[in-house]
Picture 1 (cartoon, chains in turn green, yellow):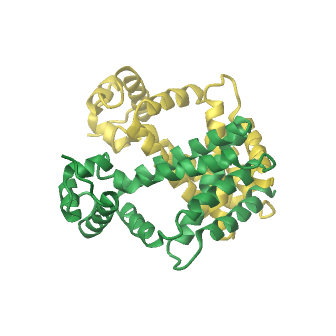
Picture 2 (tube, helix red, strand yellow; picture 1 turned 90 degrees about the horizontal axis):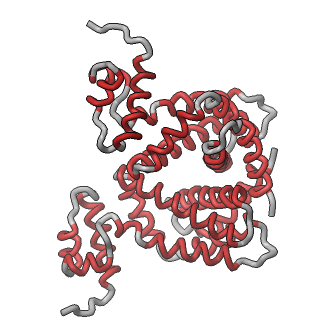
Length: 187
Length: 187
């Protein structure tokens, strides 16, 4: 019998973040996460493939938002401007997640295997972004470069935002995009 | 007694590339690599920390060339032009390594753990490049973006060069740099 569990996913995420911070990612088990959340292991695996995915599954939704925004941006926008529109749509998703994002990053920074996972998620993000640009008719090399540039802007903006209480990620993205235009466009 | 082994490092690299291609990276042992090279395991470990490093140790020398070229580029060069000079210096190192680079990439493409390692080497490359730009007096955000852009250009150029017999990596880097200026500078 499967009972409905109110916000099981959110409770599992919160329990996992607590335990990873207290005991380290490597030493935390799925059984402990489920117990802390007051749920069963079976419920955990209904929501996440493994304990690593608790930290990364949210990124799939962000990739969808990014791709959709880039593909649907007005035809008049340059490739970089379309990427910028996508990044801003993603940035807006973090509006009320500053504290969560910070706790998540601390766990990743403490765990080399998670850092490698994060890099491969960023590479997948660049691939999705390049595909979205190609769907706009941008030639392959320009699409790849626009996508890599977009990921760079997001990484740099995110790192500036993370420690800065009350900062607005969308505004930081806009500033970093302008910096990129100055650096990569000049000379 | 340590005897001098003529070109032990090169023989170990060649033996490793052969065995990784024949049997897969995961199923190859250091003992097999040493045997194929006609050397001992002890000699292997004098040159490489583990069987993975056979594929990655050459990158340290490339990072040194890149950093040095960027730091020492004329003051009159813009950050991106200094990065470009560094990338061209690195590209020139691959002049007679087309076939080796291709064989190496096939092994990495077939092995997910090696792909993650490659991504973390590229992240380290971006860090070194950003440090070189800061040493030129480039402010932090611009240094990070210039570095990430440089890595993007190298990745895209390298992927275009790899399958293209007789292609010149330096020329491809120059073209991709111009593409970046058009994409990231425009709009």
